[in-house]
Image 1 (spheres, one colour):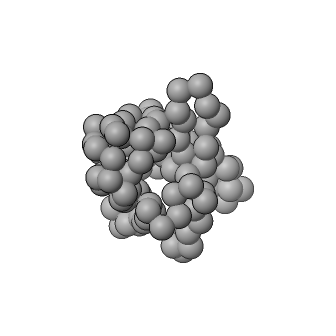
Image 2 (cartoon, one colour):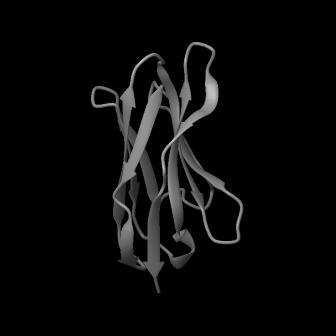
Length: 119
């Protein structure tokens, strides 16, 4: 199985920056696309950004131009650079991965890391 562990969350003022990391470990499955999702209190979980194994990226409209997703396949680590943060970015951020030759989408999840943006 594949385990994902997020880190880098915290409290930041509006306009500030944070960098989240998602470290993958384990064996048995290839990691295909990876994702960052977030869930704010009382709201549905939202897909924030996706990066394929080849490095293609996609972003939610709400974060385009402010967030950058990247990955280091040699280190099995994915990142989310978050700039110009807004209070509405406050949420628990999760990483997820698509696994295996059959490409099981969102097959593995991290435990989440809290991001709080104060106004």
